[in-house]
Length: 179
Image (cartoon, rainbow, N blue to C red):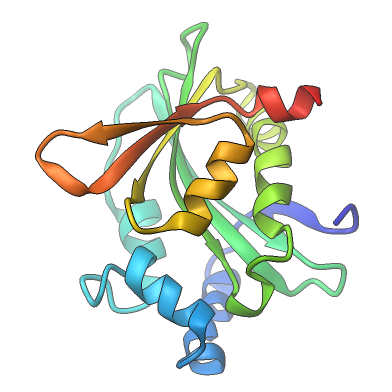
């Protein structure tokens, strides 16, 4: 995994490659996971729309930054991407909302998620100048693979009132980095 790179998403080239995953992997278990947990069973039609909506279109406040990052293999193919927002970047305790972690279907369960979690805080700090003190995300209560990854990094889970289908994961990447 050390030959992988973690970079800011290059638009529109990277979006086109990511959107092609649907054509390449439709019908696979990995793609079904993306449809169920990421595209939310048709609420969002494809990964291009997901990136447009959550990274490019939705406005955010003055002290927040949105980031879209890719993980590329040694042959420069995108094997995963992250969409996140950093809140209160000027405060001594900036928070990172890890909105989406998406791994290419054929690369799921091959430690790409671990690579992302081990390197994301450093990449955020390198890109924005602020290191996230806290990280949070919302995960479908039935998405056990994602929950296992978050647990590996010491995240705690909290039930959400009025929403039985999601749990809130709260933590920091520092616990795993110290090991």
